[in-house]
Image (tube, rainbow, N blue to C red; front, top):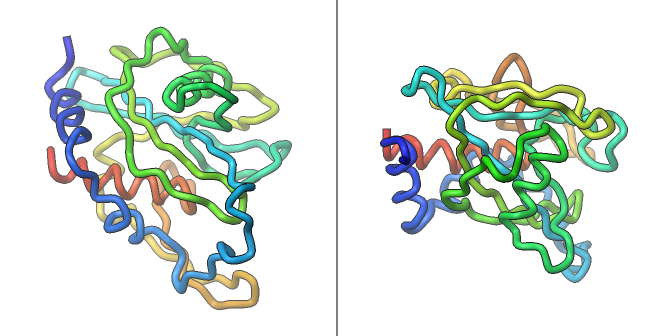
Length: 208
């Protein structure tokens, strides 16, 4: 039986998504996209997973990982479990497979309830397809050490806390920029992951 929170979230995901309205809030400003330099044929599809689980029935959490320094892209950054979609593989199956490979959660236990808005990440040449799933109890995790340095849990309450949204001034490609990010578990969550979580947060604010 689906918990009330999951039912509400599932129903909301079946409606029109906020998309870029919510995503743009966490994009680097000004936009210094390198889209125009990239052949769209070289964009590779990838799937990621927001895996929800309850504690005490009313408090919901999800996993984030810190990428290792051995991966090809986004070394040391905070991300959701995920990776490239294999040929002839369903996107949602890729999301659950990667969750198993990276943090050891069995695909059979994950219930996918919907997806968020896909978007491209020019710097790594990925098009990301975010999925949302849930599991009835907090699962034991086992990290794939070549890809993941550590895994940690974030509460929905923490994500919804407005004090967790911050900005950092920096220089990218010689251009002064303002980088929006979530300060979660004392980690800077920015880039593609923060864009996904921004849309997720927007939806949560509608149903909670």
